[in-house]
Image (tube, rainbow, N blue to C red; front, top):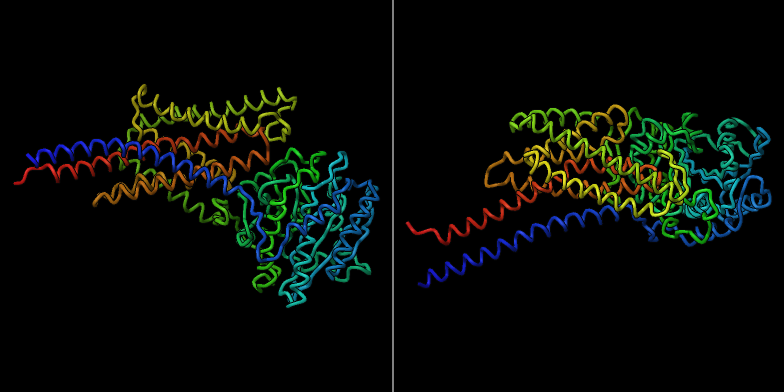
Length: 584
């Protein structure tokens, strides 16, 4: 009697526990999605704290405030002269050697660049560059473009002049504050073309013994400092950049920028054969070259983040003899790189990338054959997913056009569409919409087309492999967008072959969780970067890339639910069997 009552209580408890655990599975998935999304937002945040390296955003702000009281347009002679006197006066107060060169006039443009240097014992230098003029056809005060950068260079000069007095630097720092950038990059052009010019000022010419050029631009006014351009064969440069305080960048950006019809001052140096990197904030690009680029919209965290990013690099450079050779940054290969979390900067060279891609292709084909997946059903699901991607891109395209028309802003593919009403809201809502459509697509496939989740997952894997191969040949820096999510999906399938004590099942769940965390976090970061850099004009690209990722992530979510169900049910069955099974 007692045994029967106890058995009844235990069975009732198990039934209740089963319902709770089913809810728990939902909570786990929601928690994973929220955690991954928060990680993505953390990744795009800026580091506005003052660190031990000594860069002070408040000091830098004093420089911004001093030179951004009025426009510094090329033909505003008084404001430009004041800016030059201010920069040189500050350098003098830091005891940093500096001089001004009135370059040979060209096309009626008189260029006055300011040069400075803090020498090192090796005689080799890194060159930091920023322009000090503002856009000629607006009343922009040039806070983001480019007072941030000028102030950053002055604060760096102050810090390293003190360091050099305390102990000689191994490698030195040169500075150039360029003139006439906004009217045709004339400061950089004059600098490169007249590099051999000898005057009383430049017995040690500014480009002599420079092995790396760092140009600091200002396309936006908020957000992280973004690496958007590098020289070719950048493997060693990227390895160096990884040592920065908050390395933020993506390899596809540099490749795309190199084919766009635009150029900054760094481009002049790259054409002349120098190694270099280009950095800028991108957020609030709608303020770029407008009256809104002013002191009212300054972001102190972003200004501090300039220093927090650059100071660890410069401390490393000035203290290490590994950078004392002129060929220290020369390499024979490019790197694929991306930021997955703050200070987690993944990079590997193209050769390694090709090896992984080939192994992945072979492994996918072998596993597909071993699993005996129905090819016909997989191809049907492939076509269905491809249609979903096209629909997602179409939604983004139409939304961009409609919002552009409503705001009176002409639509331009991959062009800047500033001041479009509700653009960020449209980004969020359309992203949520295609996520919902992806889940609906899975339901339709399962109910109407009679396709199993495995067919949906395999078709999503093949979709990503297709885009992986396209980018591998056309835009190799973008391969990471499809490579690692596919590897994790294939890994979750392959590892299930380990049957011993369900170890394979548990490891498979781990792969799935990693995939979700990686995919969502990276998706938030890439979406933000593309959107703030190119505005709503690239919404169709953002949604298409998101749709490609969803072809794996939605089926894998169903797989996670199935795996958790099986584990819960197995444990309940095991417990029930132990308690209720009759004794032999």
